[in-house]
Length: 122
Image (tube, rainbow, N blue to C red; front, top):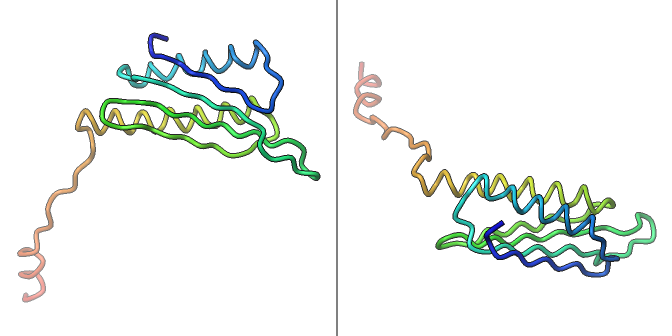
């Protein structure tokens, strides 16, 4: 990934497998939008629920020209599932942003109020 990547892991034991998974998923984001300027990923376990165990939170901040895409995907008991869900959401938002910048947004034709007015009179 040529984009600067900042990974922060809080309140979780750091593992190479987790960091590798994050790097791989961040690399794939560039397939959907090539002009990513920065990418910050924070993985943390902020809540310690007595009934559910640890809940992992993943936040992804993606800097794109003229904007920042933020994905804050809350809580799953499996850190890898939380990562997958957050990166899936980031991918969708990047695809939407890319579509908007290309001008591929579907536009509706203007209403023809005159035709409707004429049909009412008939």
